[in-house]
Length: 177
Image 1 (spheres, helix red, strand yellow):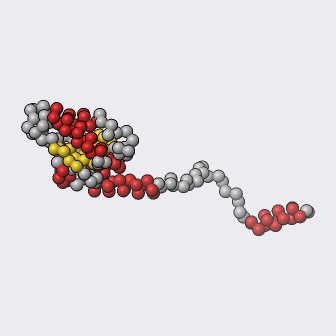
Image 2 (cartoon, one colour):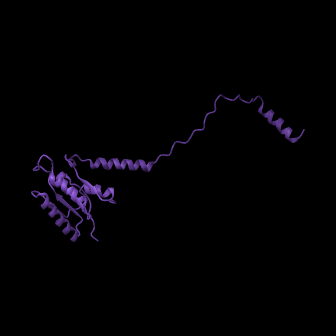
Image 3 (cartoon, rainbow, N blue to C red):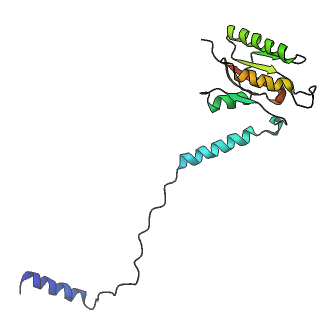
């Protein structure tokens, strides 16, 4: 008997009455690891929701049509800060009582002076149109149209209620340099 035969005989003697088990009808699959959790994405979503809820102050809402515009390239954060009134308004123009021709003349002169003086944020009060005919606020629609065509206007949006609400707008002006 060779050494390998001797080893096999010793191995069988050590196992004794052990028998090979019959194969089961099914094979249990290997457990897959759970999918990865994007913790930073979850934290970002929680932060955004907290910011939205914090911004949803009932005192800041007002009925009426709000105006919003931003030129290409203006970031969301800039328009968000403008909407919240977080830029310092350096000058204001009140258009109450003016017809549309006089109002346009006033806006052109006002914005020109602001550019010369390097003013970046202004408020234009156009009114809510309470004295306008049934068609709605006349000056508001014209101001919206006029400002959208100006190259020196980066963005504008309706003001917060303490600053005139839907009867006024904050305007961000392009740096003249």
